[in-house]
Image 1: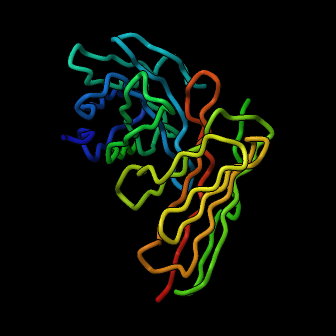
Image 2: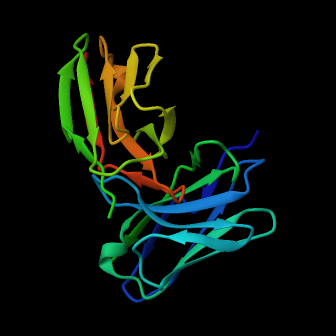
Length: 114
Length: 110
């Protein structure tokens, strides 16, 4: 069984640029959620994708967008990067009908915005 | 807005000591999960508690869900250096989304 993988592991961008982060879900999982984790904080829910459609969104502006592909992998896109976007971005996969929405996290992508 | 407050935020103890981490909210959650996160890695699920008053044990870790399903605790007996990490509680809201607490950074010194 393959776990959740994310790429790249680290990324440095400058303000105003755009970034795309990628996630491959665990085999057998059909739902992907993205989280932002600032240093010293818990993860904050960005959005979730199921069947290639957004299925719930947290308190993040529209410049945070995503995609889910037929193989259940996913992308997180952030436009017009701001300094406060510097964080660890976590992807988690789950099975839509799982009893308690237990999620399996990837190792994250560390984004630094200069 | 549903919030989960964890306390303490930081905990530094000696090997062999006991400790308790608390996770409190004014909101009811359908279930609550505890995760452990090590530097450079994503959170790893430890346990899910579902029923009010439920107690689950995982070796030296004991998890409890409050009767009203608004709070939870994690108790570690005889902590070991390998227990060091960030402990996160996360409530599952009625829309099935995870709401995380800010985490408790635990350091166990040998």
